[in-house]
Image 1 (cartoon, rainbow, N blue to C red):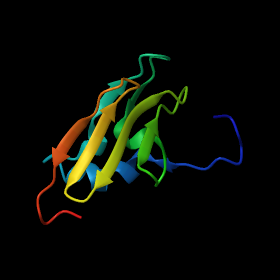
Image 2: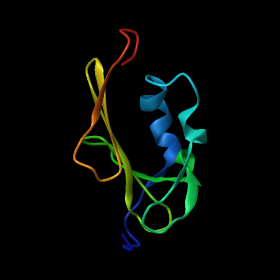
Image 3: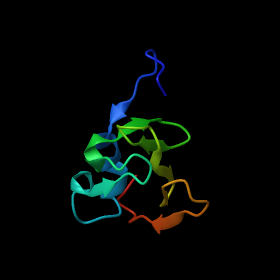
Image 4: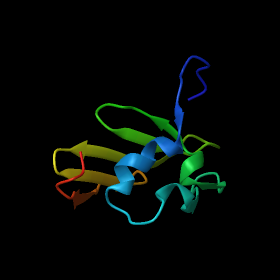
Length: 95
């Protein structure tokens, strides 16, 4: 992840997809990286994507914090590097 030509968005890119699921502003949520112990907000994550979804990485060590994949009517959310993911049903008004 030290490639100077790799570009990323900040964690605010996750606000849209996660706002469809959470009633609070998700970019204000804090986490402590289990690898480097850096505390950061979701808005500070380095986000890569867009396809097949968005991957949020720790701004300190680039460890995967979360992945979000949108499908028609659903959002898949994986926290960390675990094998499981949550599937959220989106309201009909959400993209």
